[in-house]
Amino acid sequence: MKPAGDRTDPELARLAADGDDRAFAELVRRHQEPLFRLLRRYLGSADEAQEAAHEAFVAAWGALRRYDPERPFGAWLRTIAINKARDRGRRIALRRRLFGESLQEQAAEPTWRDPAPLSDDALIERETLAILDQAIAQLPRSLKEPLLLTVIEGLSHKEAADVLGLSAKSIETRVYRARRRLAEQLSRQADNR
Image (cartoon, rainbow, N blue to C red; front, side, top):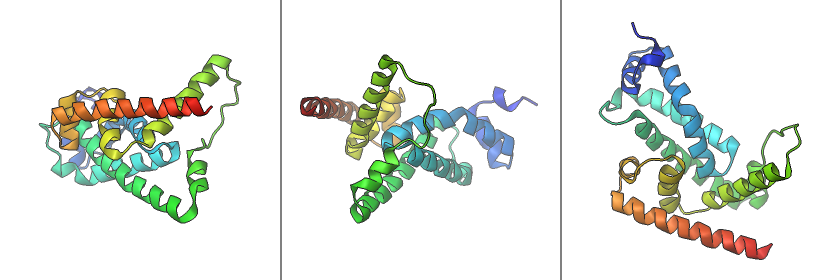
């Protein structure tokens, strides 16, 4: 019998659907980091992303019998994760309306601090990335999702179209608009400093 690490995602999904916990653990190991990165940028918060990733894996576990092995497992999982991020985004927006902006700002703060001092370059890079992540999180869903899937996750326009249920041309147009909107937003922020 092949070790779990030597199996393809569809093989692991079939084994996991039949109750093999180790097969599902291998799927989680393979996909947890890229899924977390996608969700962190989508939601703008590491804590929210971690919760959404957990919800996505739980939902995937429950839906394994419906997984089509002809479709890439990563795309199927991203579809579930984006749906969980949408749900979580609605809850964040509701909390923001009910409790004010300060709750959202607190959620965006990292819950841990690196004890090692950062060089000036590393500090600038971290701040720049935080500004970019915040700007991406503020994009409308219709622009944010194609941008994250193609530019950040490296999916082709066709693969992103499959995940989002759109045409490849729609993805191309939305990525262009997202980049333009980000450039405008970042330019305004730089002018305000």
